[in-house]
Length: 393
Image 1: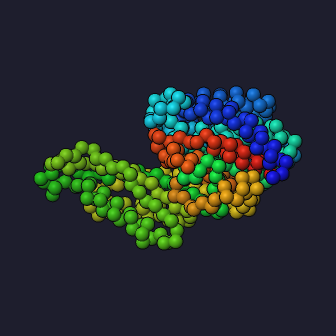
Image 2: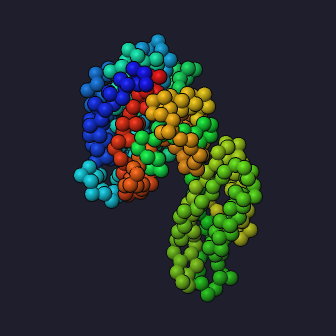
Image 3: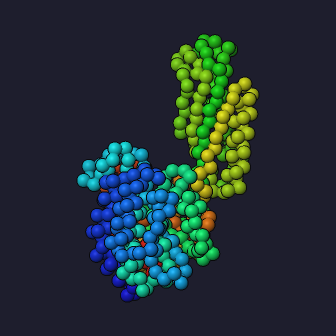
């Protein structure tokens, strides 16, 4: 182990209690996407305590703080700061104090990680090989995604030709102390589907006088599944799921006039994504028309697929092995979940990796986006240390 990595680990260990304190404060006071007013003020106060002067706001609650020599290559480190509309089911003393709002996706960990890494980088500023831009991003959980808005607001305006971007995410399947990498395509694009099928309601005993939207919707759902099974290349992962269906009216003997559906479409290829949208629209329109119904379809285009630059990701992976040891670094499969970090990956070479949060007793095995999600806070030793190390190495 070289002197620099030893110094980083000592700095991380000495600051660990404060990083835990920061994480617990954020966890106790979560705020929803694009409403992170108090969170942003708290982050600014923590940055101020590090005597970092170059700090600015973007997209209202977004914060960018910069460390190092402007003559050196730009490196962006990202943390998302928003919470989810979930009621926490936890008895810890730092459980959410905001009813129906919870850091159930680990964004409190990500934010505490970046603040902790900034403290290390400030202490080792003379050793920095990059001009480091620390990005505290709002609204990851809600379209259009804070990442897209920061980019539109000029995040890479003067640095795009040479910039690189690094971010991480909690991962309960891995143990605290472990990290995971995936080169190339890693996470799926995600689009939201909203469909209203409007027929003609009436008495359930006289369907011939109605246009029943229920069998029409059933036919649409069945047909759209063949977009995946018969139109998608079998080697290209594709998911089409409808998770919500409601009717306006209806009962055991009443045919409703309208049925509404909501779903998600996910894949890994932008060309196929566009073609699938066309096929979905075509089939919905044709089936509804064939039955004399009206179909109002909206496909809200969401986050693109996330691409980990092979050169940067392999460099980060090898750096992680040097810092943590080869047994602590694992290879990850692709995921059909999505992340707005993907927007960055389409702008500049990027690496998005995972940080383990569980322990051997599986005390922290609950998935993200659940009311029982929590982390083994020893994970902060790894997440803070590795993020600082990547900027220094």
